[in-house]
Amino acid sequence: MDRAQVWRQNIGTRRKDRPDSWRAVEHRHRVRPVLGRPIRYVPISHEQYKKALLGAGTPEPWADALVDLNRYYAEGHAAGVSPAVRRVTGRDVIPFAQFARDYAGQLR
Image 1 (cartoon, one colour):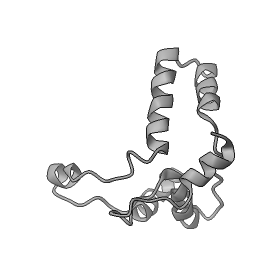
Image 2 (image 1 turned 30 degrees about the vertical axis):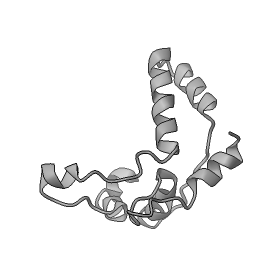
Image 3 (image 1 turned 180 degrees about the vertical axis):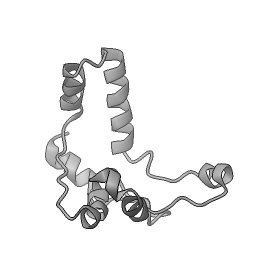
């Protein structure tokens, strides 16, 4: 998959059963107003990701596992919000935009 395909795959995609469920790349649009500056998304291939992990000293089995996890997210398998959050905490999850506002200081 080339960069353009990765980009197209991740932009504007959300689960139809959860309209507030967005992929990570789309959260930059929600964080920008909070930070007051643009946030760039630079897609990289799984091979580039693994190379960077290995270059940072990550053991190869861990790098492979992280690449697999990244692929899992990129394919949209983790786009939903588990009902377990409500069962465990007694509260609904908060929208990402609210998270960005609540933690703006840490995000800056």
